[in-house]
Image (cartoon, rainbow, N blue to C red):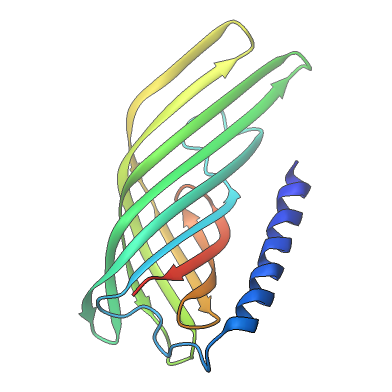
Length: 187
């Protein structure tokens, strides 16, 4: 399954590159994220183990949006929201199987800086919110973890092929340890 997800991600990235290069405008913006701009994005990758025993396969997906709220020195400070889902699965002794499902959402803030390179955006920030965790093992027990605080950090980079669409990668302790995805600038 893991290989299938990686292969699918590579194929999607290749298709995105091919399509956007065909429809791209003359050049990517010098500063993709600026004051007043709205961006949305999403990505997939190995999930953080918020709850669970730290073993097994973890997969995460997240979506976010940000607004360039304040000009702060040479960069822009953004405010927005974050929504993520992760699942961990582990099998013990061939018979005992447990699954953890985590849902997290909250506010997100980041500082964006473009380095005066057309299409490039680098950033770092924090998410802050709440999460829910649902646990299941075998046929014997199903439970949940009450609401828990969701706090993390991330650093990332985006490259815009034109004034609207690009690719994105993030690292840190968020919904995922690392993810790759797509980013779209709405304004």
